[in-house]
Image (cartoon, rainbow, N blue to C red; front, side, top):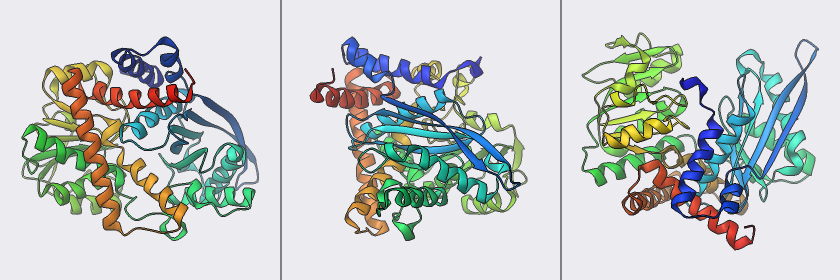
Amino acid sequence: MIESYNSFHVSQKQVVEAAKLLHLDDATIGLLSLPQREFSFTIPVKMDNGNTKIFSAYRIQYNFARGPAKGGIRFHKDETIDTIRALACWMTWKTAVVDLPLGGGKGGVVCDPKQLSERELENIARGYIRAVSDYIGTAKDIPAPDVYTNPQTMAWMMDEYETITRRHQPGVMTNKPRQIGGTEGRRDATARGGVYCVREACKHHNIDPTGTYAIQGFGNAGQRAALLHDEILGGGKLIAVSDSKGGIFNENGLNPRELVTYKLKNKTISGFPNSIDIPRESVLEQKVDILYPAALENSINHLNAKNIQAKIVCELSNGPTTPEADIILYKNNVFVIPDILASAGGVVVSYFEMVQDSYSFFWEESEVYEKLAHKMSKAYKTVAESIREKKVHPRLAAMVVAVARVAEACKLRGWV
């Protein structure tokens, strides 16, 4: 069953598969298959009703060979240590495949943000930093927002860290509000980086970028992809979209801007004018040129992979395709832009934010976009070359690029 997938075990298998293609020794494979450092702790929080509640929390620092750990902190009621391990692992390969001088990390708090007040969320955020302040910093580990956290969360966390260290260090967090050290261009960076990759893939595979597309998941990444697809690719017809409550379809096209406005106002896409309701799972199986999975892990699996009709699948979410599905899609000539490449735009611009914070000199939005486009295009071409050289599916090719870079850093340091 799909539910039986352990994300961390999947990530470990991906590492081993890439490592074997690279003929890495057992010691290196062992080092790259496990986190270098893990923290598991509790956060006592005074709630609005006067009671104290204890929250479990984690921070995983997966690998430091290429630089300090980098990765988000998520607040989610179903968070587990293995999910965080997997995400920290994937962040390591994500920073490596786009050639950033960073490692990978991830954090989480087991809580339900929808049931918490703003004051309670702030108390959790500050309590988290009090627990890990000795182990994060611009030269150690730089967190960012993730699921159910945002720039305001980072502002609270940065302030708590600066209060503890008694130093102004805005670079300790990224994706902060622009007024306190954030960068232009960060809000849509993940989706923008993905669409830049789609542009390269369309050139490479001779596919019309202004054809049809569908989006599974209409949160931040999905909404941004809808808005950016036309802007970057010069057109396109959005025919199907899903969110957590359902799916909609219109063969003549859905207006992206109107749909985003409707979603923000109504908290759902259901009922959008001039659309028909469809099962949300069927959005993945529409006959389109480009499909953007931007929702749940394991969405494309051995049960539905054979039904995927898109020419290009651009993974904006983490782990949307299972290992079995990767093979099916590859055999069916569906080109997948894997998550560690497709969704790397966010961490690329986070790195740009770190650079700007260190110099206290900030770039114009156009410069951020230009540098992001260059990074994503270069990374795409490197992965494409790996596909040709190794004759493997795109995810494995991207893993080969990333694992090779991290393994080389480990060896140069004398760790293995």
